[in-house]
Length: 305
Image (cartoon, rainbow, N blue to C red; front, side):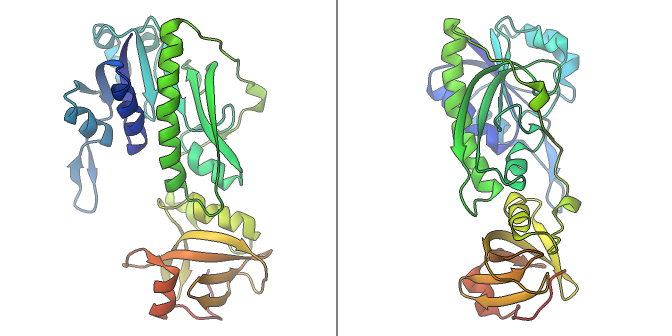
C-alpha cells in the first residue's frame, strides 16, 4: 500500500519514522510552509520537513492543500495518513485517495476534538488520555474510529512530556492501522457526537494563573500550559512563569507564598495550595526548585498575582 503522509510539528515525526522503519511505502510527505521563528524571525522548516528530507522523501508544502487535490491524486497513493498536519481537508482532497484518509488524533475521541487535545486533557483534570486513529470526514475530528490506544496521565506530568509519550503511541497506532487498512480489516466504530467535547487553540492570555481557583485547577493549568505558552503570574511587577506543580494540603490567602524550600515553593489557592517545582523568572532560564531556593528571589509571604 502506497501512503502519503501529512504532518507538521515534532509530534508528527515519530509516527513518520515508525512507518518508514516498518517498511511502509511512503510516496511523499506533505507539511506546512516554512515559517519565521524566534525573535529574529528566522525562516524555519517544520520538524517533519527536516526529518523527511533527511530520509530523501519528496516533500510538498502547500499554502492551501485544498487547491492541490489533483496534484495529490497524481502521486498515486492508496491512502493518506495525517498527524497534526494543521489544515482542514476538502472533499476533493479526501476523494483523491481510494483507501481513504486516516488521522492520528491525540485524544480519546469524541473527547477533545480540535486543536489542543493534549493540553486540554490535562487542563480538564483527566487521568487517562490516548490516541485515536479515525477515518477523516469533512466535519472536525468526527470520523469513524479504527483503533484507540490509551495511556495514563502522570501526576505532575506536563503537556510537553505527555505529548512526547503520545507521539510514540501515535507511531505505534499508525503502524497497526496501516496493516489493518492494507488487509481490509476495517471494523469501524461510530463516534457518539452527543458526547463530543471541543478544544480551541491555546493562547498566551489563557495561561494567566488565578490563585483564587481551587488548587486542582491551578495545578492543571500550570502543567497543561508547560512548556508553552507557559502559565504565568506576576511577582513584584514582573512576570513569573510556573512550569510544574503538584497539589498539596494547607492554605492561606490566595496567591501568598507559604514556603520556599529546596523541594519547591508552595502557593495558597482558593482551596488548598500548589507546590511549584519548576519556574522561570523574567528574562531568565528554566529553574529547578533547588535553584529557586538558592537564588532567594522568592520568600515566604510574597504575593503572586
